[in-house]
Image: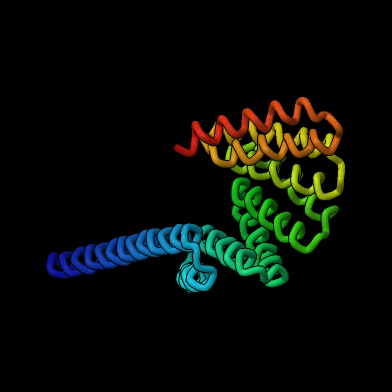
Amino acid sequence: MQSLNFTHRTSFLFSVAFILLFVNSFYAHSQSDSIVVKKLIDSAANTNSPQLRIKLAGEAYQIAFHSSSNQLLANATHAMGNALFRLNNYDAAIDSLQKALVLFNLINDSAGVAKTYYTLGACYIRKSNYIKAIQLIEESVKLASRVNDSSLLANSFNSLGIVYYTLENYNLSADFFEKAARYYEKVHSFKNYIRVKGNIGLCLVKTGEKDNAKKILFNTLNDYGKYMD
């Protein structure tokens, strides 16, 4: 009887040990996938080669697709959309980004949804569909404000400034460029801050405010020397 109980206890402990080993192995594999995918996405974002960007994003997507993580898959799908956008393949980029949007919504990732709206908006700007672009980027602004993403707010306001400048609504364009400048300064993105201030000067030229435009453009030149040294 004691021998039987010992056998049962041994069998039970062996089962528990096997389950823990499986769980730890699965967790370690998931962690490994997460690290690799993040590195590939970061590398894709930072490379200047469109072809290499696509290759890296594709590798990230393949790993994420075979993982059990919707978060990894959402991030990799967005990275693929961004890579396609930078390759000027806007229709394919939109298709990928719409899939990313579904995935980010599925996991309630507001920051992911916000950046995807922004990238979709950028695609529609390139396709000259400005009404659609405005709608998408405005959604990005709402969510970026909610999650306090200052960098995304800066980029979104800048894009809206560009759209309204293209539509020759220079007053509204200048308003958005002003908002973008404040956020670029807040996140210490000084190169973008200078570019946006220059864009405000161009808007003022268009509205006939030449004295104010000169003042801003001269200040921009001074800032250029200060921040670009």
